[in-house]
Image 1 (spheres, rainbow, N blue to C red):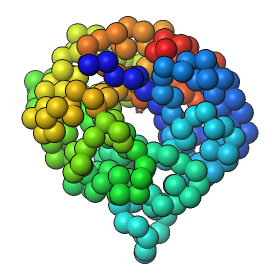
Image 2 (image 1 turned 90 degrees about the vertical axis):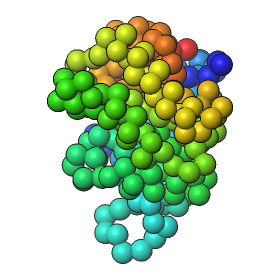
Image 3 (image 1 turned 180 degrees about the vertical axis):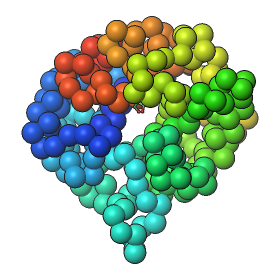
Image 4 (image 1 turned 120 degrees about the horizontal axis):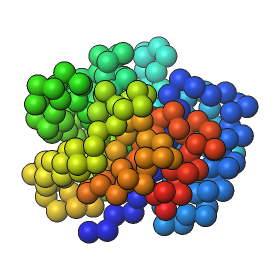
Length: 246
Ligand code: G2H
């Protein structure tokens, strides 16, 4: 089944109001690629200004709290993201799983809160280098997926991002064969979890994607787009990835 590709940026803890000027070139490239979805997750401080600056790009958050509101100092809710003009959030990024000790159950609750609130989710899974070296990569990733997949998982609001932890920000990427094998395993696990809907849910690859390797990685089996960190911070680096995916 043909799935519409999604290229999503993840600015992480980078960017300020001046950096939003980069969105202009990115939006122009997105407009020139009507067959492609382009999205950018920005720090919470920038969601409102980023969403106001460009209608053509889906702007989102990098994380949300699962609760609607309450005593959760420093957190933002789905409703707050929506109110600021955000349309989605990343959940379960390995940096949050590591820095904030997020569990699969919490990731699942966050994704379900996004669905309840009418926003989309990009749910991240991925193995560490130690887990890959131990031959446990597929088991770890499909286990994370099974434990964090939200109820009601459907392509209309959910994408999966496979991000091997050891490839994030390191300049190292898995071989195309490894990527295809893992995406195939994720697809198979999705079939077991959600049946036919698995054919429609997009599986993105993330981890040191650049303009130089995007075409090759996007060409791997079952790769339906990319989640891009460092190379999404400037139009000069992100636009070639959009063009490779278009
Ligand atoms: C992985 C990725 C974006 P980078 O975290 O989610 O970052 O492209 O910098 O490896």
